[in-house]
Image 1 (spheres, rainbow, N blue to C red):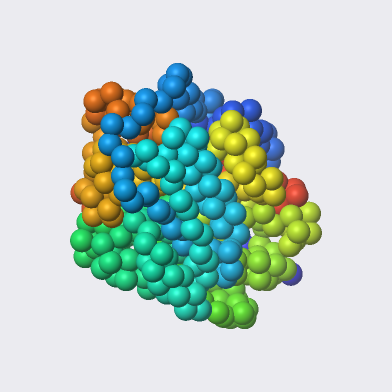
Image 2: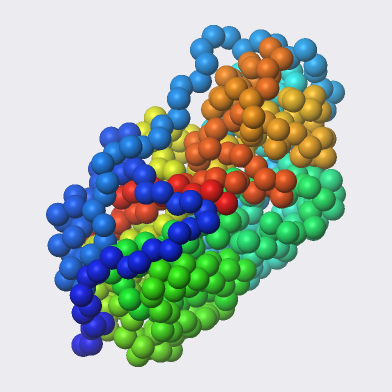
Length: 450
């Protein structure tokens, strides 16, 4: 059995980031976090010592405004109809349940408050599949045929690329809660593509710098060869090398591949201090190959595409001490309770907040536009995200709108302020650590501006 080299822990030099990243909170809302003693001890066994969680300074969403919601002064002859294009099959199927629960919770709260422009909102769910199938195109055709004004999805950047022109070309809003490819920032989408997840320019910088602060001087990467994987890997490498480290190996694989021994062997041959896995559920196959060859879990760093509950996939302790990043702030306990009421089987909450926020922003933009047409909704999405009175749920925000006020929606995913390109201009990235049962707990949040 071979193991990766032991290195002297050190704090790598960090360059000044244009995104203004600042370390923020440990887990909030009562969630348990790894203690600094446990985290440091397990990491030192592999020559990596990540910073201990900082004192709690977590942001929490404030309660919505009380009181009844005033009736809309404008009623629509065409009720708002929203479609979802989220994964229930394929390599990102584990992300489907929290995203769908977030959408359904948002729809419930909107309709409990009287709906949009005097009518209840309808939601139609369809599977996105993944890039190995044509499910997304078929689902999109079905949704457009049913007259939706907006489609929430896809989760995968690669899948979104296959349908974005079809959706926006039909004058319908595409609003992804999880796309992170930087390519969408400059896409010719007629102003109809929006997202609550930040570009991987931010996640890449956070992960690259975090590995450096953990003492890694060299990194190997195993990367999914698609828009998501290669885009994120590029930004991770840029940040890590700017912080004084070196990427000594990067091996690609394609969606649909089932054998990864070659990639693992080539990365381990370079003897990196740490390994970044930029994959989807292929991590289920890759992790055992690495740990079987002596890689310590504390040397493994993962990303949103594979941060999942592996309690039923691996033996206890397989991932203990491994860490990873997920865009968005930590899910608060009250929000989790609401989501569990929607779907009691939820195991994690990745992108649930972003999905919930997508529903609220679409509904509020329709209210402000006094229209349920996709192009009209798109024209008001930026305005409801900035510059007015702060609010964080549909009832409180729509009350302000109906009283003639300008609003600034801040949601469950964090502050939401859109650029002209439909991207968040500021966001949180959560850092998480795996426990002995191969589930993960929050460690800290980093906040950045793009």
